[in-house]
Structure formats: structure tokens, C-alpha cells
Length: 83
Image 1 (tube, rainbow, N blue to C red):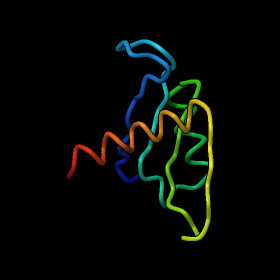
Image 2: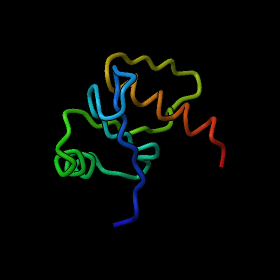
Image 3: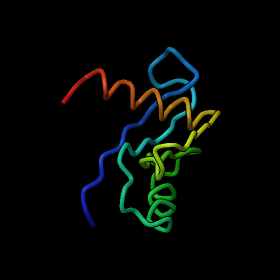
Image 4: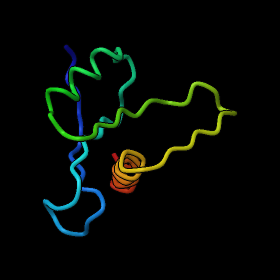
């Protein structure tokens, strides 16, 4: 299996180790749904987010809740940190 990178994000808190833990996989391209399920089960967290590119540039994707909040927060932090 290829090496995968992920972040553990605490959402709905401003305190480290508080809130709700969420695993965010910033690049889930090429992962089968069964693999994503196995990874989520292995991490044993209440939520896991697998970020995939949009399939159509004209598409408008909307999400809400813990996964959207944590996934977008993690992606924003990566973007601001640079390469």
C-alpha cells in the first residue's frame, strides 16, 4: 500500500486535545471506497474526511458539519503553510 498522509484535527474548540477529533486525508485520489472504510475503521475516530478533486470544473459542491469544517480548516492550513 502506498504511504498516505493525514492530519488529526480538533474541531469545534480552541483548545488543543479538545472538541471532536477528525482524521483528514488531504489527497484520497486512487483510494477505493473499501480502503477508505478500512482506514476510518482502523483510526477508530467518530469522523474521517477523504478529500477528492472535483470531477467537473462547473460543479458546485457544498458540505456542512464537522467533516466540512475540519476538512476545510486542514486544507486552508496546508495552503497557507506552502510547500
